Length: 255
Image (cartoon, rainbow, N blue to C red; front, side, top):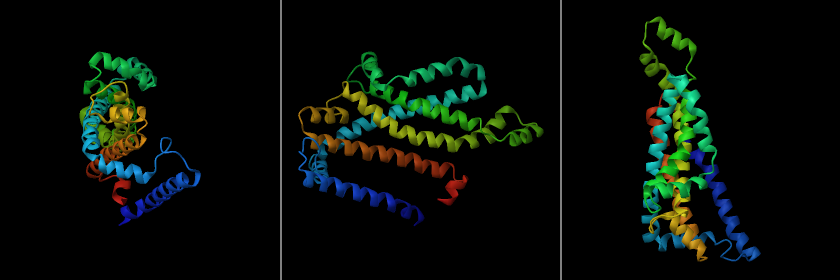
């Protein structure tokens, strides 16, 4: 019941925003090509479900692949940097510089490398977006282990591997899941942005882009709604995994 109660303020704000949106269109006579009514968007969301949801699932698989690749590489890289500081000194500036480049600049390059229609180019874009937040947060978590706990383990003649497994990794897990929740949203964004520069005809980003180009903004907004729901689903899956894996954390026990 406590968890349900926490959602009530958000649901109230959401309802107020939708009501204000609908009312503003009627009050100010806003044209549909500028901003469609939420009721029209929901109607199209239902009537065009046979094209919207297959497109959403196609894009979701691209986002999920990029999420897995980028997050996995981020965790591996953070582990190497935490264990071998020379590796971090050499490679960290390159990783930061790569993530400082706007993702739009990578889209046509990855399209040329992997093929504009190929889902692999979209996975690569999503992976780039996911890599840095996961890597930085994982590294911070690994370095946040209590020195007293580490000294205690060493006093019992524990190896570095045992210290890593029993102290550093449990300390890092809350940081890792925080980063994964951020990456779950970024992955969906990366996949859709990549599809704006070329993708399969049944991809959600292509559907949204085509709808906007022919001024079918209701369909475009319905596609955005599908993308939002799928992004929330991935975020919820990560949050659920966090509850199962990090049950010992104080904020998880209070939830």
